[in-house]
Image 1 (spheres, rainbow, N blue to C red):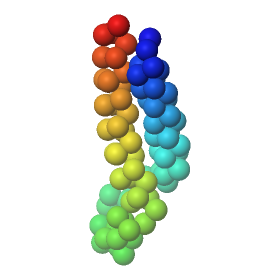
Image 2 (image 1 turned 90 degrees about the vertical axis):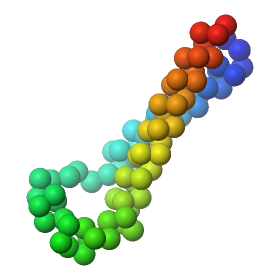
Image 3 (image 1 turned 180 degrees about the vertical axis):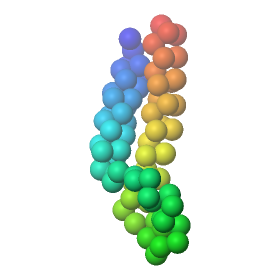
Length: 79
């Protein structure tokens, strides 16, 4: 494997670890939050809280992880 493939493998592993850490930092969701969460102050301002930020970061890093997986596979098979 060339240096590009090794770099992509390293980035994929790093982003994967970051995704795991971000997901583990989130609070667990109860069944009650879907019933009562929309009418509370917290439910209407969720995007401004730490949980809202972690939720957005989860989406961003998950998409980056998927893209890196595809790029790593292409880089490895091109050799």
